Length: 370
Image (cartoon, rainbow, N blue to C red; front, side):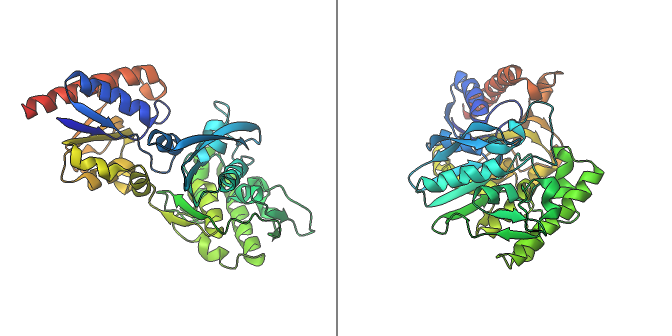
């Protein structure tokens, strides 16, 4: 019996590699031969998954969500770099319990992009999950040389709270990235503004109150208008595209830079070589921290099940809701079924339970195979 163990991370608890390794240890204890392939869908953990698949980690110093310098990592091979919001300036770079929705910036993400371009790669993959800011990607653009001014011509630091003061954008000092293909890997389909846009839908998750959301919405509209007047005539149309609202508007900024948006899950499965493993295994084991209605919208486990068909696919999750609508999985097993404790912030207990889940799955598989 041969199994491909290809999960996403368990957010807040274990990386995709740690999930895969603990399941694989349990499976191996029962005699199942395993291949591990930690996956990502464009969210936090995308760089780590790319490194696990063979790309090189490359450190770079960037600003975190509060503007403090720190060392982040990008993943690089001969032609491609993977850069993520989460480890550069995302929520994970904030002190525990701190949310700063009006001042958090995407500047560090732009610094990482600029660093990646400087390495001479032909394409840069932008992973947009886990953001802390709703600045419309203005910080990203500032790191690439864009300058922002108010109605009097005074410079403006492009933080979220100040976006509504922007009237002109100077692109004369922008970095030349015309020779690099930019790919946004994201499964967020929201436009930049409106009731399902970056401010209304996602800013509350980053600490924004009702008044803050209204202020951010106005600021994002001001940013679009300023860019339209200052060298990006298609800004309004780009802001309406699905995905423009990803990562607090970093999707919009990337579109202004000429990026194309692709399904994060499908793109990373291709980048990490998922398909080439399928002919050599009998079963696929995937999963994520929480299986729910969002899984049905093209999250990674659902894409794994679709791409692996007709091979059986077992999903392992921290928790699961709506299991009756997830019948494209052969089985769903959860950590929550095995303990009354909240494992979302307990990596040690989660790892132990995943090992035992692997043992149980392996026992069933080997009995069936026998």
